[in-house]
Amino acid sequence: MKHDEKEAVTQVLNDYIRVFGSFDAQRVLPYYHEPLTSVQARGVAVLSTRADIEASLLKPLYARLKEGGWDARSAWAELQVKQMSAVLAVASGLTVRRKGDGQELERVAATYLLRKTSDGWKIAVMAGHDPGSVLRLD
Image 1: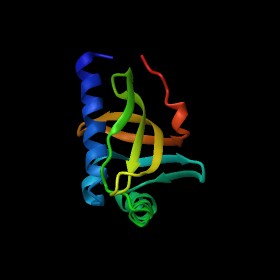
Image 2: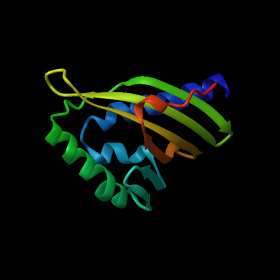
Image 3: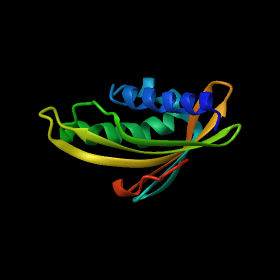
């Protein structure tokens, strides 16, 4: 991966994780490709539009996190990025979500496929997985 492209993808993911904590779906939605494929333990969903992403993914997730007491701050505990082609990159990372009192709420690991569009790098596929299985990418 060209150094500048790896930095660009890393910056997008850093911005995404920061904006995700805003609980503002309208600020988060531009980071996703349309359609977005989400692969989670509960199943696979292809979300065709931003409205679908907001209704099926973000609203239920934000409700669960608020109920759990998440303090809305996240940072990557680990993040690996590799460019696969001129328009495709893979990233795998781990975040630790904490409650307002600093107690750990959950560890969240995911691997992302990002596609470079005319609007920059967008998350096209995200797959949640066990925190200990973050991919090691060169």
